Image (cartoon, rainbow, N blue to C red; front, top):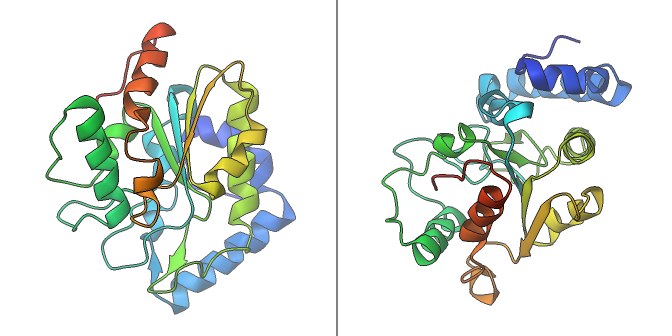
Length: 220
């Protein structure tokens, strides 16, 4: 199956694209784009992979679903396109960066700048129907992205995994904690941020670890 994805990721995941579940998933997604309004735009489904090649991954952030409102989702978890109002969780992420590192809250919520530095921002489900949160769950995406994390955890080390919330933390079992840094906290959602996301200092801890491993830190 010909999936349009960055070369190094294609090499790692080629066998996955040939599995029956992925072929079924691909047919479902194609039909959905033909019959419904689906986010992100089809060309951006694998944006997280295309902006952050396998060999460049330093940090992994795991989300659950793409944003399901107009012009928001563009293939990077928590990120929105330029000019779009910050969703609450993203605003709280910026608040913690301000608290942790003293950096001003940026004018744009587009986190492409992170991806290009090696922050791999992947949702467990890569597509969603407009205004229907969770509408593409349990169609095969979770199996695919589980394999993505397993592949990273198996073949690379000295990665920082930022696991925010119970859903992301389920991936911790895939990761060798002795060869990577795994940081956990509650989700940045307004429902939970005040119970441990604010003050977690994950952004400074990430950079401290990367510097310790002689890896360039992230310009958050």
